[in-house]
Image (cartoon, rainbow, N blue to C red; front, top):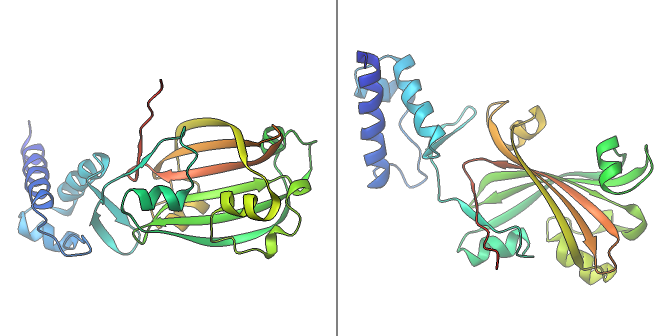
Length: 236
């Protein structure tokens, strides 16, 4: 092992121990890269290699123009439980918020039309939202709704649960659901929303939902920060 690799290992071990003992500020911000380089008497390149390894382990994360932070505990997500985002967070003692980026009618992509079983070039309702856990953005999601079932929904408060809104306003309840999950790199749009570098790793979940009458009603394209999520499924 070369000298720089020895230094990387030493930095990783020291920072891991500091994180474990809660040595950093209340908001979990690490000292600046310059301060850390000085502290470990190393170059910025070697330091960044160590920080990159800790980031890959999910121990720390970087926000563009804000610096490095200790990663909070991951949110546990069981796709088989029909719980919505806010309820899921509350059950785990976490605070959830939802911000609407935009909501409008748009022409759906070929992929979305196929998911919704609609003809090519169909117009759908598109709602883009950013979702936070404990004030940290963790999920960028695009919802595509079949407009036949949700007239007037753009007038509603879309920062709340769509699950609850569907039930209260339209008497529509989720039935069967199909999940597709793949690791991916964040798009420019998703990166900007999540305040991370473009091309950062993510878990991409496509969810296609049917209602109690087995009609395909909507599909969600979810981009999760890879270090924010723990998939936990138990099948009987």
